Image (cartoon, rainbow, N blue to C red; front, top):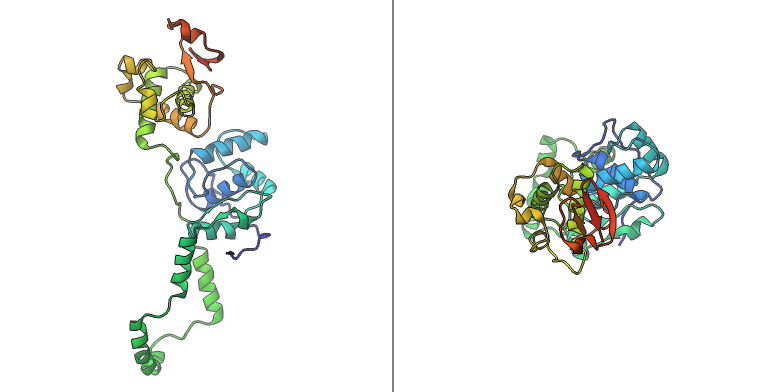
Length: 302
């Protein structure tokens, strides 16, 4: 199953706008595709500048000695154009077809497309469908009145006009294909984690708030803990905020942002699954855990 593209064709399509979190559309598609080309972005190329795109961009800026701010201005765009290629026709065709695909450099583009055979067959059927019986029944009527219609209707478009119209259709701006919700986590999960972060770590430095969220996520990956966000947070004696009721406080936007940063890959703890406040901890067991680092008032442990 093939797709029509020239693998050597690259297109510079960035507009003059500074691309930042919350943006959508063609510029974001190109940004994601170019970041993926050199291995910084591993998510879906969907034209939505979410947290995954944000951290990929920051890592790219850090790697190439630029100001790390998560904004794609002229310096970022020029560096991406210098270091990457962007196969616009390939990206556009697969987005419009609803296919799952990637855009990594050094790989055959055709091998980076996951074809859903049922969808492809449906698309092909829709483009090769035989005329319906009703269409066949009315064909004679159309032929009978053809002369009259030609006199009353505009002339048929020329080949050049048809090509121009097709080109216009092909250049229809790409619409975003998803919303910025991290894969695998419901809004309830994010809300509950934000409440835990707010109850456990408000007043801590921002890195410390991300760290608390990261511990919850690290426990999700561990076989010794429950396998849901709610199960981890409400596990007996697991979190002080649950015991003293602070889990039910309304979290602020900083807590929610800390959760999203952790979900999108920031783990300041070094894969810790425990933490404690050395000024208030009374359990000899928690003191026995191998310590990784201290962030703010919390010590994070293996």
